[in-house]
Amino acid sequence: MAHQETDCLFCRIVRGEIPAKVVYRNDHVLAFRDISPVAPQHVLIIPLRHIASLSDLSPEDEGIAGQMLLAAGTVAGILGIRKSGYRVVFNSGPDAMQSVFHIHGHLIGGKQMGWPPFPA
Ligand code: DGP
Image (spheres, protein in one colour):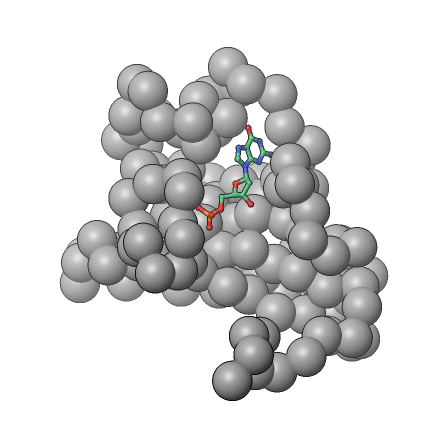
């Protein structure tokens, strides 16, 4: 098993200690539905291995970073939104309101979204 943290919520989901609605899993990543969806489709893509945030990625993590992005297209296909479009958001740190410190990409879609995502 890849490096895990005992008390990390998402490591516990990887280990199956906390149930989740899994959409996709391979040898590197897990994708499961967000418990508080902000869009008709909202899935979190995480590495099986514990990495706290985008800012904690190191050059040796190049492979897993790529795996997360590759999984986004695969998951969008599973959700049926690959052609209609989707957004992948990595919140990192307090200003972005990151609340779970196991890196995750929010894949959201299933509706037309605005840009920029906040008022000017
Ligand atoms: P962030 O704020 O970017 O760290 O997003 C964390 C997300 O994790 C948030 O959208 C809600 C989701 N979340 C928190 N706890 C759980 C849980 O136990 N299960 C699932 N499926 N999602 C969770």
